Every structure is written in structure tokens, then in C-alpha cells.
Length: 357
Image (cartoon, rainbow, N blue to C red; front, side, top):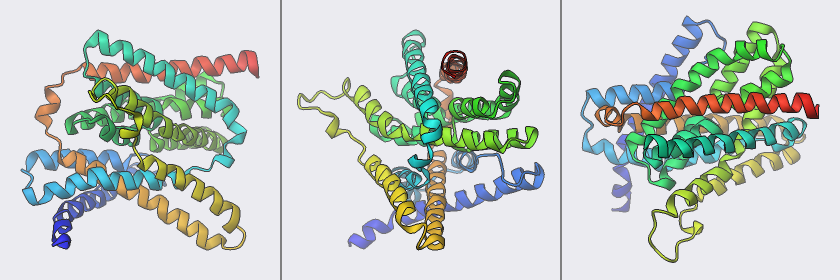
């Protein structure tokens, strides 16, 4: 009987995986075949959620898929976030960390302050503003999807926030490499720091770094941008519990409320995966080099598959009529969030150049 209970989630999980596969195929066709890149600069996750929204709104979702889609949005998402920790290697961050970490903290604080003011000014739902702000400051859709369960965000709020972050992330990805090259006089360190702190998604940062490398022949910029973004991603461990506490302290009426009651324990799995990666590099790189690298590669790939499946599931569960009812104001917040991150990043780098370098 217990086996039958869990079987009900299988159809929805399979549907999410099928949509992931379609998204990957479309991504390869568009990015590699049509645009001519070696690796597509387009996010497979973005395509997955868009395809999900299209199919989910054209066809009425049958009940036998619903439980599996909900399982994918919750548990497979968390598994994907845990696996994401395998790509973070703090020992590599020492060279840029002294500059990047203060810069990242300044950007995060600035955006949080600005969006807090906008919530009151534009009267935007708090959950929506929280999702957009963490998406703008930490790691885009991954941060949004990780934060959504701990603040009780609705599906349409998650989809709207992801659409918001995706739109402005793509604009940044396409424009910032050329702007940064001109503004920072083609200095790889500063261009890389700017791209790594101001663009939302890890895939978009990598794409922007790749565009810069291909246009201006600077692989160093790509490396610095990627490392800076991965350092920024580690702030997910701090920001999710912080947002959970800030939101839920005003929405929980129990007197015995504490952060323990809403702490997202899968974040501990994320931290454990970071530790696992670094211990593995320490002990296995010399003795079991090929096997260890294959293991890391497999977990990295699994993370992308799980996260993209979760995004497809969210897209399939999203009603566009609900999105229309939210109006244009959240997009104003997204635009101001993008602009704030960019400006604060530039000012912080300028301060470093003029006073600390």
C-alpha cells in the first residue's frame, strides 16, 4: 500500500523530465545550431519554465499529474539545490575573495534596502518582493525557488518572479559585456568582478563571460566572472534562513516561534556537498583522479537536470490569468533591482580602484 502511495507521483515526475529533455533539445538547436556557439548562452531552465507555462495553459492538467508535479517542485528541487554545492570550491576563491566578498555584500544590502522601500511605495506583495530581491542579489531562479517554500510563496508568484529575473538577466547578459569593456578599459579583473556581481543567473554570468571572451579575447575575464558568481552563490546559505526569519516572524502567531521552526534544512545538505567536494579534492584527486572527476561531473549534471525539472513543473502549474492580475509593478521592482545591483557594483569597484588598489 505504501508503494502505491508513492506511485502517484511518478506520472508528474516523468512529465517534468520529458519537458526538461525537450528544453535541452530546443536549447541546443537555438544556441548551437542557429546562433553558432560551442555552448548555448541560453538557459535551459528558462526554456523549461516557458514551455511548461505554454503547455500548462493550453492543455488542462489531469489530476494524475498534479501530485508528481508538486513532488518535483518541492523534493526534487531541494535535491537539485543540494547537488549544486558540488561545484563550489572555496579553496579556489582565496585570490578574488578579498575583493569579491565585500563587493557582493554591499550589492546585496543595497538591493534589499531599495526593494524594502519599494514595497511600501508601490504596495507590492511582500512575498513577491522577497523573491525578486533574492533572485536579483544571489543566484537568480535557483535562489527564488529555494526561498519560495520557506516564505510560503504561491506558484504564480514564483513564476512571475522567475519571469522577471529571467527578462532582466538576459538584458544584462547581452549588454553588460560591451558596457564593461568600455567602462573598465578592458581590464579583466574589474570586468569579471562586474559581470559576476551584477548579472542574476550563474548560466547568464557564464554566457556573458563567454561573449566577452569571444569578442575581446579574454579567457581570464570569464574565469574571474565565474568564480565571483560562485562565491555569490554561497550566500544562499545565509540569505534563505534570513529571509525565512524576516518574513515568518510577522506571519507566525505562536509565542514559541523561532528560526528553528522554519529553517530550510536542505541548506545543510548544500553545505555538506561543498565540504564533500573539497575533502574529495583533497584526498582523491591524486589517487582516484579520473573516478573522482567523473563523480563530480555526474553530480553537477544531476543538479542541472533536477533544477530544470522543477522549473518545468512550476511552469506547468502556472496559470497566466493569475500573472496578469498582478500588474506591472513587480517588473518595476525587477528593473530597479537590476539597475541598483549594476550601479552599486560599479561604485564599489571604482572605490577599490581609487582608494584600495
